[in-house]
Image (cartoon, rainbow, N blue to C red):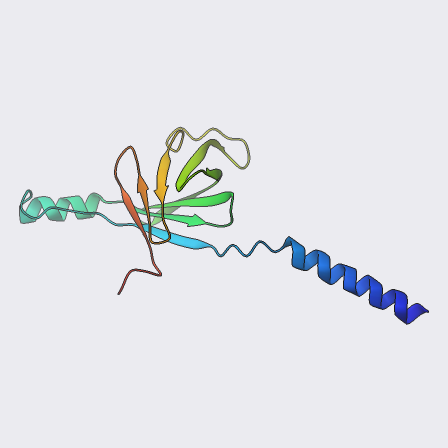
Length: 133
């Protein structure tokens, strides 16, 4: 009798754990600076590259993302919730702790498996799985 109840308990635990798994695989998108070499000379291109901040967006699950930015040797990480509506990511104005983040407030990204495009600034973030190195 004890082994039957233990078996039933283990079966229930396995089913609960299996039902909680969403199947969402985290996705990493890196910002890629696009420079038109016909518009800028060599010195201006070097200056643009040196001023460029390294930015990364990681979709952790189906409602939380991390926004990482590196400024030289220092970096910042913001964990924030988002909503996906018809291939458009809408970022909440507050992070997961409730702190208002003005630089991310009201940002909308066009979403695809290979890229994210900021609708306001046209910045492009590419999924590293699809970028050939």
